[in-house]
Amino acid sequence: MGKTISLFRMMALALAGLALHNGAHAQGAVYKCVDEQGRVEFTDTARRGCKALDLPGYAPAPAPRASAPIPAVRPPNPGPAPAVSPASFPRVDSAQQRARDDDRREILNDELRIEQRKLADLRRDFNNGEPERQGNERNYAKYLERVASMRDEIGRTERNIEALQREISKIR
Image 1: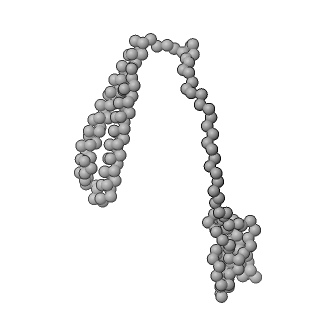
Image 2: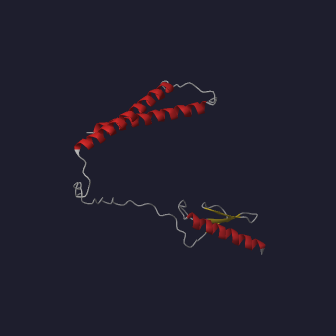
Image 3: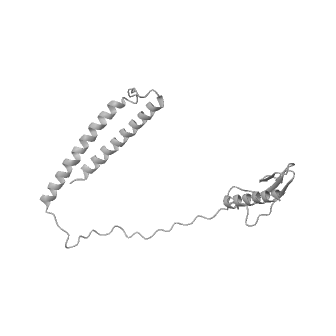
């Protein structure tokens, strides 16, 4: 009786595992094997003393089939919407707008100078890819990690400089 219950439990666990597995990797049948000591094993390879199981709801994954490509459907592009300002939208006279643009240009130029100084300092510390090792970098991997982060920081700073220069060139 005890052996029947444990066998029943093992069978239930195997079936639950197969149900959860969803058959994604199974390509063939499932076999129940019993060895000389009476131990039960479930496998996907047929061996001597194994019996193929007919599991309800279990089907091997179907072979993928080629399908025709689905044509892309694009919505009609009416073009950019016309820029219309509401009548209540506040207007700024050209002198005030020029003053705002000058302030913006000055702020962006200050940021650009800061980024350029930062880039010069980073390149000096980077020393053409061979920065000085620090005392806490006895481990060479730690040194390489710092060099890589320095290289990344230089790249970010260069991109910031390019973006600031683009913004400055857009100001009228």
